[in-house]
Image (cartoon, rainbow, N blue to C red; front, side):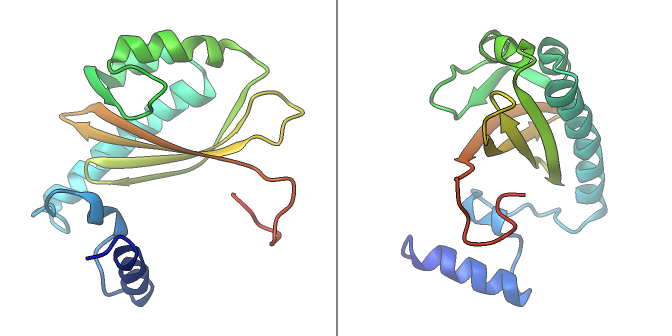
Length: 165
């Protein structure tokens, strides 16, 4: 399927309610337990983990505590500006989160099985417009093992009255 047709088909199916969650498109194989009690238990467990991790990390800014509690030592980092591994993330992120001029406001947390997304409003300083950030995590055995992020700067003007959040 073409790279253009696949997203269009996913959107059409999602709007009609006839498809599995769009997030499943990039996965190697569908989860055979999706919709089962096992999937619901995994989602609930991972929701509790991600919620506490996000609170410690983004709100309390306890980078080391959040990462040592919830992130696997060999965690895979897909942000090209950061090295793999829990210790590398702590080293790079702790100074930014220690800067009280930065703000990190959690807007949404979504969890489905072993995948989680945290939507955040980030500002490097109080006067900045900031950015919408979506951090995506994969969990395994109660630990975060993989991370992706998408960062979208907030524009000066918007074609609508409800951009980003």
